[in-house]
Image (cartoon, rainbow, N blue to C red):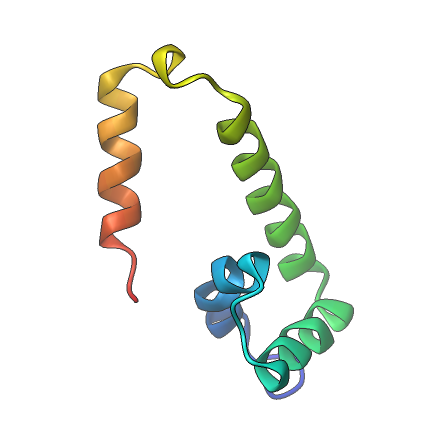
Length: 79
């Protein structure tokens, strides 16, 4: 745990953080944690790279099986 936000909680918040959907206090806690935790900083970079790569992939280039697996994985994430 780094600061008042642990790594597990950061993982739960990372998508909302990237979308700019966190309240100011939670965003500050995420930024503070990232400043102190190299592992979570690397995780954030990986998520950004993955989102960027998938966003650049034309829909018809993603095999249906891979698309279905990604959708299932995202649907299984806790809200």
